[in-house]
Picture: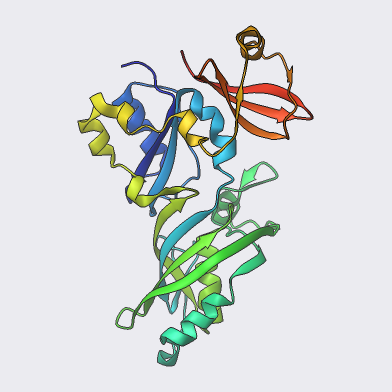
Length: 293
């Protein structure tokens, strides 16, 4: 099989790390140059964009995207990790009166908008060269800086009174920790809670309905190009620049070309053939990613 440049949308199974998915795809596709964008915790499922070949250079663009999740919050119990895999550190009675649609919906609406969030201590963010979860495991104190996030949508999907759980759908900006939001929502409901389940159903314009299981890819390996999104398709919303043939060699060699276009990311063509992606800055066009020929 020839090497592939493009994007495959994987429905990550529960219990797998994002790196597990990459290793499995390397084995299936016999291709070493593979990377993912937007890490999902092992307990989480859903949309995991995977980049192949020269498309791995596009991760800097895809990690900036907004995302939508469906989460189940277990009320009345708090864990040290903020999810079901952690140790229980607190129990608090849940007032049955809070398990009403209107009350919960009002609380969820209060989270919509720009805000500061302090990432959970059990996360892979590095401070002073060490990951936060390493500080947590060693019982070491570290000051965790807040970050700017935005919640675009937060709506109630279901209340399970028997299990004392709520199921919500939430759309957020990059860098938002849903585990922390689940804890904060629980506190605003007058109790404690943790994220019991998490499914990512959207990354930018890519939805869970567009994803594929690893077994499906393995069983349809001869048709992999049919469900791989090309670099050209990834940027189908961007404007194009058509280069004359005498300028193409300079572009491919990394020479910056004068272009009277506004700053931005462009699809580059020559004689109706897609060449790759270029960036215009200060009226100069620079090669970014070129497709394999």
